[in-house]
Image (cartoon, rainbow over all chains, first blue to last red; front, side, top):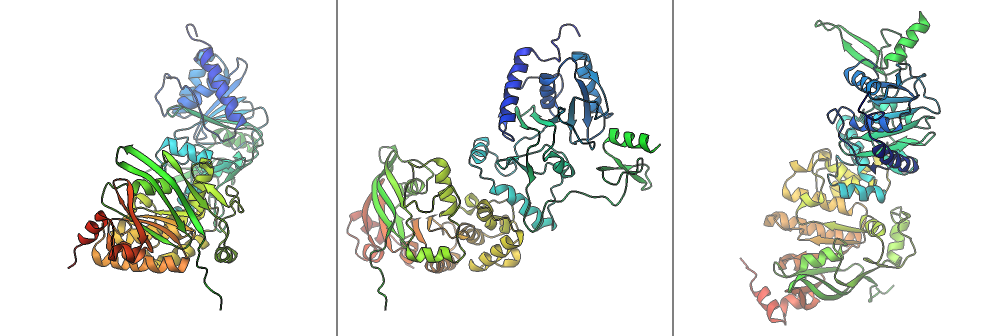
Length: 277
Length: 286
């Protein structure tokens, strides 16, 4: 597209973000501040993820964008179109074919491979924020590894609901050091963070923070000895592909109580149906 | 029969502390020693610098001059306590055999570890010391979780045990502190502070804002706990009755300086300094 630099951002901005990304990769889980730019979309629509993607995208990379696992929802479609127009890169919906995957709220069911990059859109990067409103204080707590309060929240969950009721944005400890908010992915996806061969980058546009999990990094979900970390499970299987091991969305089909459970990862579901058929 | 040790070891050595916000505002050239197992009361009118002094002692505000030295050599009784399963001292950040810590010379990481592991602070307003958004049990358990305890069942059992200790109904462990009365919140704050068995506790007007009968019960409880746990306490209060009940020794402050110091009974019954005489004589007796 004329009048715009490749992938919208100017090269100086990309360099600045790449430099911050290198720092993020060097210190897994550490929130690196960066000079976030105004993007042609509102905060909350993935401006953090878009800036990261724009900075790492090459002319021959193949891009996939998902929102809640789906390739065809508004957020995914608009961001995919954005990069088609400003970078002219090839896009795909196939997880295996993509080099860069920008995601909101899910990690694809298909295992990622080495060389792929997963970019997360993050609303609130600070896992300690709910209990400590001061940024100065939370930075100090990270620096001194004072993470006792994270368990206060989990304790409170068990005291109120009898089990750990946090189901998304479930806090993790990266490489035995930094406690990190994995963005609002369901805790179902937390085990996929651990030792993943792909590079995972997290960008928060409004808060102007980015962080990273390098490939094959140890990522543990916080828990109690007598209340270990568990992922969700369903009694149903996917109504379309019959999967009994993927993350399911409940879809209401009429106003008489009709409902169906389907895979939230549309690409995975379609691939399986192709195989079954 | 074993004779009691008359010279108790010095726990806190305060050397020439000065922290001034302006001439006569703050505290100036304060010098004292706190011995293990001792309760030291600091009394004085509002604005006499007693809270400033407490903030400096408790590691919350660096002094303009002077040192606060904490001598943490393991003594016999404390070694026995540590042996009884209450070993909270091995936390990496604090070396076990380090005998002397200069509060403002050590790094912030170690200062905070010290505050978290071996010291405690009871605020005048329980809202400052409690997390109002989470349940009583989570409040009591927080310091334990910060020390790395990760067993929900044990945390809960400890929480209930401490609620009993401070005369709260253990059945209310899941209630939020805001549903508690002022006196109960103060008890909860005390439980939350003492749960890690600190050696040294700072208290800022622990009974302020409570009515007289609640105050009396709280004082009674505090006195019992201090004796049972062998705590050393620095107690700031403007209430001479509270000081008489709890403190072994008193320091009287005025305009940032200590005007008189000595045994509690001696000071209250036979005040020497004109200001102390004024203070003692202005207590209302019904």
